[in-house]
Length: 271
Image 1 (cartoon, helix red, strand yellow):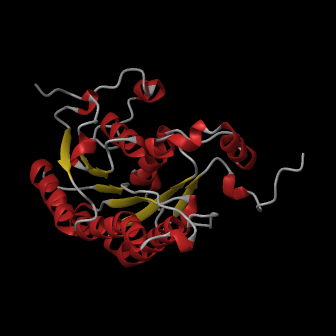
Image 2 (image 1 turned 180 degrees about the vertical axis):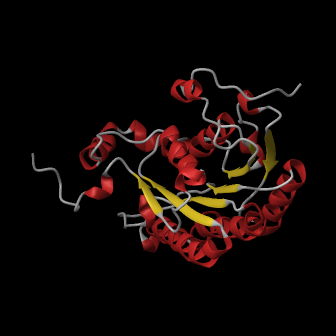
Image 3 (image 1 turned 120 degrees about the vertical axis):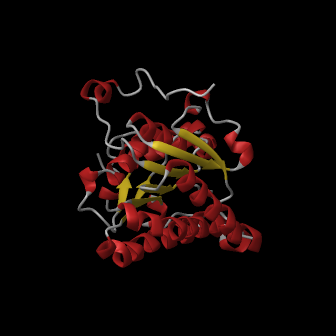
């Protein structure tokens, strides 16, 4: 039996104020089965939205029971397949009657020195991190024009600057950042905002090995002004802000969610 989504104790401050910025709004979140996507789907549901939770079929099996409710729709989707993305948007609109927000969050990280990167690796990371964002935006934008809705893409600080040994990921995320800017220009006069979040290291399944490496974590702590890596909820809160009317005059922004990482000029701490 399906039921209403409730998340007791997750955001007590919000529960006290009764914030429902997305009441009667419909949202698509890709990569919704884990990490930042799961936290984002929860955040929108908490704030009153109807949410289509899209991910690969085997990943959706891991979606927690608290997302099994009348306001949540599970949508098996491979975002690297344009037909599946079109079907995702069509199903969402048919089920909920429209579309107000799409969060293109699905992605994968593939790195390596350029001589070690295979053609398959290169195409795989672009298929998800660039093509998936393009397909999602293309399918959603006609509906977002009608609703005056918005797009939020998940990029990365790796799309705003380079990393050692991560050229495929840097290139893909850089392309997604530029796509965000270009679409904001194309659709601003049509009433649609397009923004992106750019997280630093965030504790998700994708970063398990890094977070478990205390020496590596300490290197991040030295560079991040707030002294810690991000939690998925930290990023979800910023995605919700960008999708809300609180950000109604914000578009074309690739917003770092990095605890102050990019405030540095790159030199190591000297005190």
